[in-house]
Length: 68
Image 1 (cartoon, rainbow, N blue to C red):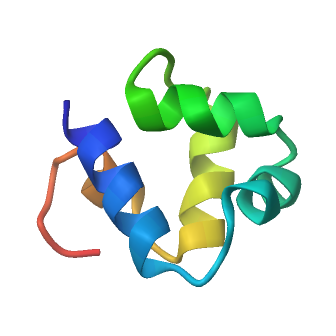
Image 2 (image 1 turned 60 degrees about the horizontal axis):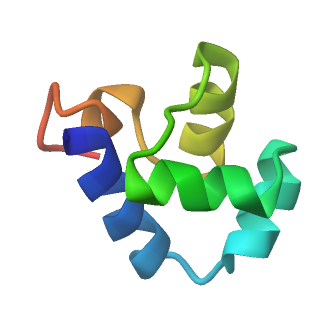
């Protein structure tokens, strides 16, 4: 799924750890692991926080555009 691929890509490109991202978007590190593996997907509110944290658009994360 596009979200999982792109979420992993953006985390790798960022200089933030999974723990830092989890703290910034107010979820557990386990949630980040679940998003990375495709076990679960963020709520709309959390998706918005992920976009702010990773400086990208929801359209990019969801695979609607190739520009972030």
